[in-house]
Structure formats: C-alpha cells, structure tokens
Image (cartoon, rainbow, N blue to C red; front, side):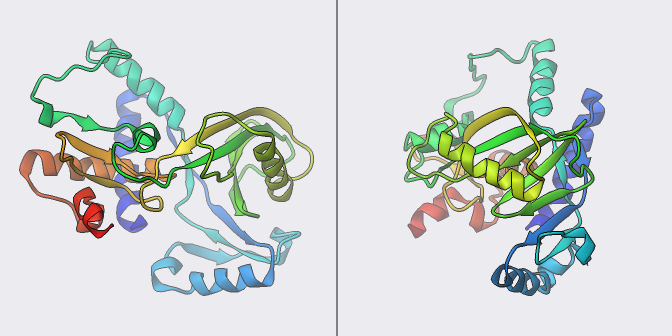
Length: 272
C-alpha cells in the first residue's frame, strides 16, 4: 500500500517542516542491486508486476553497477530525518507547556489512553505474542562514496546523510532482543559496507534497536480488551505508516469508523 501511504506521509511531513522551520525529508532515488543470477531473475520478475513497475524508473546500465549482476533505479525514495523530527517536535510541545518528560497525564477517561509503546510493549507481552527483531546499524564517514542515491543490495542498505557520511544496515536477531551492539553485528555490517560502498570508510557510530513487529512490518491498531487503544507493530517502516495509521486511529476513536480489517488488532487476534 505504498501508493496510498507514501503521499499522505510526505504531505504530513511537509506540513511539519513548515510548522517547525526545518527540512526533514530528503528525496533521492534508490539503486536496487542484484548480486547473482537467482536474485536478478526474482528482481526482474517483480519489477514487471503492475503494482511494482510504477515505482521502477529504469534498468541500470552496466557501467553503473560495477561488481553487480544487474539492478534498477527506483523512484519515490528518500531519507526522513527521524531524529530531528522527534527532537524538534518535543521542543515545540515543551515550549507550549503540553509536554513533560517521564510524565503522562490524561484529561479524559482511561478509554482515551493510547498505547504507543513500540517494541517495549510488544516484548512485555501486553499485546500477545510478538515477532520483534533486533537490528544494528552503522554511521560511517567515506568521502569518496557516491552520495546521489540510496543503495540496496547484499542483504543491506546504504543511505547518504551528506558531507561524506552514511548510515548503513541492517542485521536481524530474533532471540536476543536487547539494545546493545554486538561484535557479530559489526562484522555483518562491515561486509555490507564494503559491498555497497567500498573498503575505505571510518566508523562513527554503531547502534542497536528493536523493531516493533507483530505481523511482518505491518501496523495494527484498535481497542484493547483491558481498556484504551493500541498503536503498534509498525516494524521497520514507521516513518511511512505512522501518519496514515494515526489518522485511521483518530477517525476510529472520534467517529467510530474502523480501518480496513487488515489493520484491526481485534481481527488479527481472532485469526491467530
């Protein structure tokens, strides 16, 4: 549903940028790269699908994909500055006296409570069995790497930040759901960095987090049996899904109009 969610997300973030006086969305094309025959065959078949080909700009020329078997340039990509969005939004609300760190107040009854508790809430078991996954990323400096496009391949991704810096990832770990970077993760990320960018880079930061997943990387919302509402399960696509899902939740809470059944936590639980 990227065709529905992406335009709404971009419109929402444009409004936030105007309100806060910052730039949060940095559009850039994506290079989707294949390293072997099987991967390339699957990629070409997928690119030919009607729901996918609208996002495919062109097949990459051989001189653009040195060391890769094939690839496509994908439109609609970009980098959303989540850190700035969170920090500047917090400052905005604090300046108006309606945000207090580590303090929650409810002006209405408990049914107004919305549990936006991410991976912490899912790991606690509050919403049933989860499928959360730990991931690790690097921030690196490499002044010789291409900063014009996002690169996806070799089981990872490389996103330019500007001024010779990049973020790259990611790893998946389903058993040890902590926030601590690991040596195994670092080795995996080094291989991704070398494949997507090159061997010459400096590591600036190594971070870890847990993706909030109940069902793949797809969001779920709805009333909870114990009271309140749930807003969770956005996985690794929170920046894409959050605006559209927040609108759906607000409409449900205020007007009684529920979302598509696919996003209803109650319907999801009945199918388990």
